[in-house]
Amino acid sequence: MTKASNLDITTSGQSSAAIRTDRGGGSVTVDGGTYTSNGLGSPAIYSTADISVSNATLTSNLSEGVCIEGLNSIKLENCDLTAKNTKQNGNATFLDTIMIYQSMSGDANSGTSSFSMSGGSITSKSGHVFHVTNTDAVITLNNVTIKNEDSNNILLSVCADGWSGGSNIATLDATSQKLSGLVKVGNDSTLTMNLSSNSNFEGTIDGNISNASGIRVSTEVGNVSVTLDDTSTWTLTADSYVTSFHGNSQNIISNGHTLYVSGTALTGTK
Image (cartoon, rainbow, N blue to C red; front, side, top):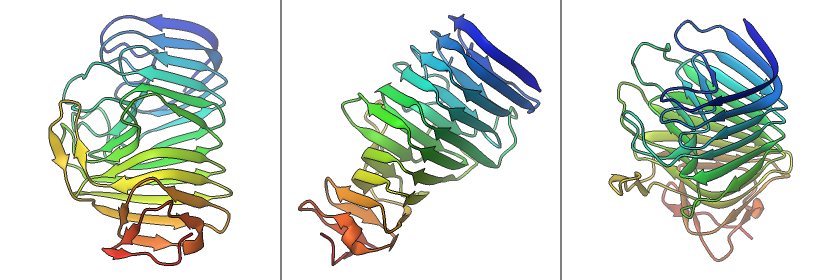
């Protein structure tokens, strides 16, 4: 176990995350401080362990904000994360702020990856806010302010990328959370999206995906399940496509668009 508090760390080299673990797992706990990375392949946090960070400022000026590989986790509480991922590294074909993946390099065991965040903010200046590929991931958000400054406005992509050997499976659990943007689920991928406790999502779900080079990765949506509790809503910004929907159709605000469930238009929406 490693514990740190109120550090001021800046890195500039390649593969030089400000907070990083390598092979071997374990746990890291960080409280307070400022952590900035400037190099290629150098997120503010790179996890092959269980990393918890609270009350910190995290900045990546070239790479992803955070990366989780395989059966590992990152937990953020009241942190401010900013990333401007403008250069691809290694096998990556997408740009993103939070990347959850499995490289199959042996650095991390395969299994369910976990990203959880409570309070604080995410500022995504380039690429997708969340990107899940070649692994099974659970993303848990509670009252996080998300600022997506990328013109494509993609909140989450679950799809094939530059790695193989695993599946692209994600669960997004949102509690007291505002979400907006496009959710992209590739034809070979799976997403379960659960909104509760006055959460709301303003956006669309489909499977039309191109990577950062403009190469088409998917044209058809994969397996998508959406659940809204009685206090949460989804406002459509375009026609959207899911495999199953659980909840009151009155909590879907159509906004002139249609939600298709297994190819059939959902009726009873507002």
